Length: 112
Length: 117
Image 1 (cartoon, rainbow over the protein chains, first blue to last red):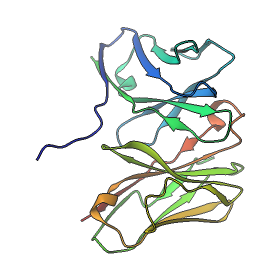
Image 2 (image 1 turned 60 degrees about the vertical axis):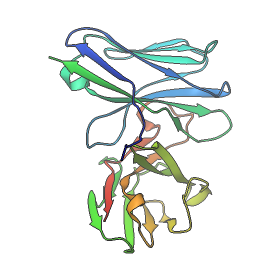
Image 3 (image 1 turned 135 degrees about the vertical axis):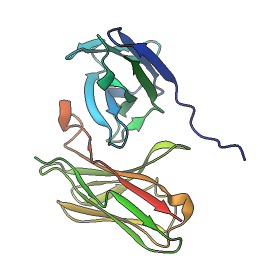
Image 4 (image 1 turned 120 degrees about the horizontal axis):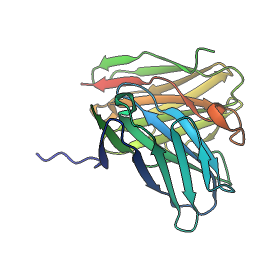
């Protein structure tokens, strides 16, 4: 029979190019956002975070942009490398508690 | 710190058997979370604890699932009896209060891959 499952958005980029991964969140009361990277066979790993009072934060080769007007979050990876191939999740944490709400994820494949 | 430690990494069992998954959180983290990841539903929160006390177990699928945290350094997730639809990767994660930033926020273990035949 037909298998039904999550249809992960996928993104393929050439090694060395920049990658942009997008995430739409739902709760306007969320005041903290995190990007996680999950490699095959591993647990999600923290990449970068941003608070709702910021619109941009930079890390090493990564930048997170937050647009609260349209409830949109993006992760930019500069000079993408094969080791960046993974599933990327955004998570939002509302100011009402300690729940972490995860998106469905985006699968990034880096072509050597 | 060795991070969040989960065991077993892989478990294959037969329908009807009891399954116990174990987790050791990062020392000093007072929140512990159990998540389940499947292709069908992605990453789902099952239950979380604060200072060893269960705070929200609304994600626990049914009475066959139970979780305990007898002390600050150990938690178990038990499935009894197990069913094929329980096959998934179960992640434990721990965190300090969420207002802390950076890598202290929600650190995941490597996961326990459960297959129920």
